[in-house]
Image 1: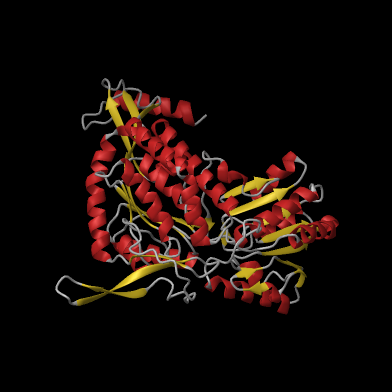
Image 2: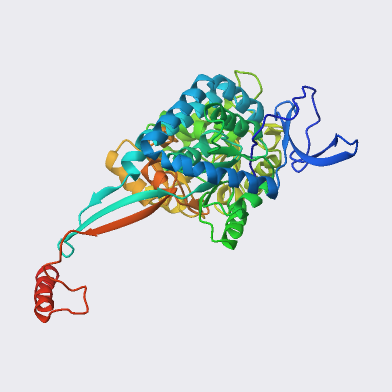
Length: 530
């Protein structure tokens, strides 16, 4: 419950540089306003900062239960109009929204860069991928969700059967700060395409990004609040979960996911959860080592390692281990974090994560691991230089827990079987990857990895395939976004059977004929007992 945005522009847009606050202070500040009668009124506001410079970006409303309830009420009213449009009507609106976002993409990129600190190129990639998912959801919702016939089978030959999917109603989306456009769009676009209204709470670290998205929708449909944003902190997220929305889509840590589920359980509100990851890469003896090393560095260091499906662990077969490590070391040393456009990646967006990274690196080294690139002195807030560790014991928290920083652990294994066993030996199971020249071997490994998505000879390659469902197992969550399964995730299935004529063997009656039952038994044994 750590992420949100709001329905109106920032209340203020100061430009003066501010001292970077602590994690709790970063989201709550007290603001004094004079009322018309001259009485001062104090209220909490959400303040956004640039993590690179600590510059104050703007203030947003800290929305409480009353504001959330009012937003949900408006969404329910708009949802009835939205559902009534049908998939074809919603498609036209969503494609118009897609065009509006794409035309102003440079503005959105700038907001993402300011709030997360990531380089412009990375922000552009995120926005482009998000738009691709919006496009796919809009164009495919009808084919996936509209009512269609299914075969009734021999036993029910007199029935005409069909399956259709109806909107749930209002979906509450709680998004993360690391990919504030791409990740929540995986729920927002698919929930909207399925006929739901959406109330989105972006991270308290990226409220401006969520607000920007909501404003672009309002320019298209100012009188139909089908997509709205609420800004605030964990209390706002809790209020959204308690608001009796029809489903909650949450992205964040496993610890926070448990809190979300506990609140949702109070009203039996269903939820789809994307938790964290501790993704493993496996490098086979026949792998193209240069490609594997390039992918490992990108997957481990991209976005300062703040990627749920980034690479945190690598298991390389011992016959290629030394050569692989040498290649990774060479590529990692070239990376320079910073605030300029040429930087490889930006700062740690969330200040508290720096200490997590420090603890993981310290534990790995204390337990016998070796740093071949960087080390504890690489951690210089708000930036962390690339860190590559080798031969780290499997019981180190650098191996068992999510680091979420530019740290790569590379361990040697005897063979692929050992690599699979080690990769599967965590409570996380979001993504994984394998590098091998042999197609059958790659498929064999992929099918044995405990993960929601596996890539062969690439990392994050699935992110641009909108048709592929995405989600995790265990502490990495449950349910799926993206693809046809993502559309169904935000739908309620309804089956209809229509009797066309009386059944030739009429058994569904209290006046059942003995000969009909005898013939049915004969058919049953003929079909199933031979």
